[in-house]
Image (cartoon, rainbow, N blue to C red; front, side, top):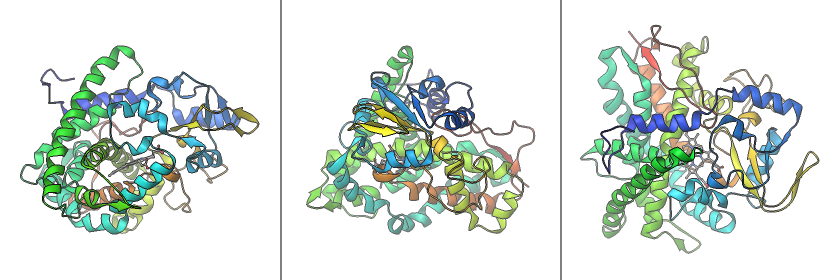
Length: 427
Ligand code: HEM
């Protein structure tokens, strides 16, 4: 952490670097290790993740109970789609320990179904598309147009700031001081960085996460209380959540504040990473840039194929609520199941030439945004942000290409994947 950090300030760049370091893991090639295991046996008995040196969302419970890993497309799909047999409540003990209130990711069964139904409408394409113009304007006016004359940039700086700047606007924060979002971005990263496997690093990370959790709560509370007093107007996220109702259930202020707060880490870093991988693949795959430049409808396929080929989150963990069996291996109730998304997305039984990045492949669900009851609620927002960004980059930066004087970006990370920098030049 920066020496300049005060009790309430956490620097954005160092917070991102800290998260990347935590989730980078060992130098093992996760695709290669998963392929080898998938071909050897579809079930691994033990903690498969531990060899990569990254924490899981099992948090402090990792290693405390029987653990198994699954690698095949159909097995991962079977687990993620069945929220009754494979539950997520344990997450509240791990990452969720930094949150309180409404942590949807760690909810199960009927309570999850109800809350999800309550929240979902605000995040559906019909609503998100209303924000497209606003998102596009922020991208062009606030971020990219000021860069045009420089003819070079590290696009990661943009990728790092954009998602929280957008969420800041969509949450209905005051627009008089939009630079405030940088503080929120740093706090959001500190919350993600609070989950550590090294006990020596745990204390500082947790302290930072604690500062972040409190800082964000206070900031969002100001907005929520004021908006409620004004009669909860508006089509932004906070306005929609204050008015949301499903089967008689509504959200109180604490739930709106804590859910909104959880959106910052959920929406920020993930979108940054996916943007970085999409751009890296766009700029390094022969012939792709020219195709996408002249046919912008390909951006949707580019994003879908990136989410398959290089998912941001490489695995998801669930707990078994009853005894189950996979390929003759019995898994008892109360075990952890590590769903290796990164493997399932390249299962040769599900995808032809799975290790080839091919935006023309037939559309088929992959697990880059999860699957089943917990599937990413914000995926349409992320896709609108990334597609608007690519369109604006191609419009504003003529003949954009990688900066040949800088190292070629590499997508890396055992738990959260993405590139560290995206140095580009244009004419
Ligand atoms: C490219 C960017 C993103 C990626 C790769 C991503 C990935 C994911 C994944 C894999 C899950 C499933 C978690 C599980 O099964 O345990 C998830 C859930 C979730 N995501 Fe995203 N996400 C992204 C962007 C966003 C954005 C922009 C938002 C909010 C605006 C968001 C909010 C959420 C929430 C609230 C959940 C929990 C849903 C539930 O438990 O029912 N995400 N995300």
